[in-house]
Image (cartoon, rainbow, N blue to C red; front, side):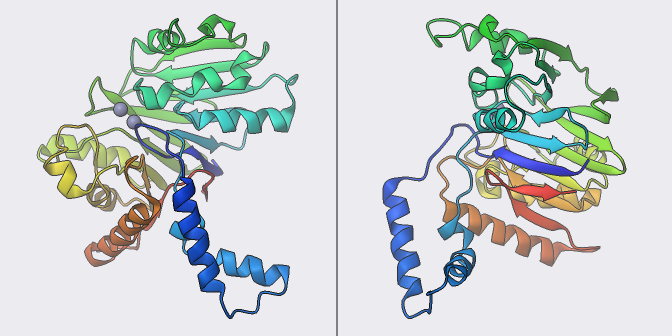
Length: 319
Ligand SMILES: [Zn+2]
Ligand SMILES: [Zn+2]
């Protein structure tokens, strides 16, 4: 595996930067440029690239969709959130509509934010393309069909003319898909969710979202530590703060940055990526959580340093 690319990183509901927020940022950026020598294009670009990400960038608006580049021509995705729309457009722009492609898509579960992108996934409408949708839920196909039924959507599921196949992946068994060894683990979430461990060519990526960790049952904690063991990258549901996750939002089915650090440290993970951001959180809040998480990792570290990042739409992580 070569690369992980994020197309959708927001939890529960897509969000967009508002005009008022953008205006405030532009004013702050222009104010910060006062007195600087910005005559050349290069100087302007360097100035912009040096701004804080929470000012000059944005943690994405689209819901969950993550691509894994395996090194083969086939595409591998996790989840069909709204981020699959720009992914599909990029794939078509790259190949043109006439070239048949294969898409392997691993579904964490069928909550709306993880399936809402499928009706807008253009490659699924192109005859000749192959779409393989994998998951541990027996009602996976029914859920994806139902969201396109009238009166909720104007285009029927069967309008998608690609060769679409659903593949049930029972948990706890190793599967071989797209040249990868894939292991799944059932997670604590309303209606269950599944985490995926992908291994290929000495590289390991774990995709674990919409998963609550109580850390009170040793056997359950151990099963996740084993699942994360020595991974190069863990994409982790860090929707809430620890205080929220253990009080008002206990049993809401999500986890926190603090729990992510603890589990990944126990498992010897190289890189923890915070994912599935709370839709009410703005960029400054997400950036603050990232800074806190890096500090937490530093002060609790006992072995080698662990990299920590916070996912945004368009982010790429080389493996
Ligand atoms: Zn979700
Ligand atoms: Zn969910």
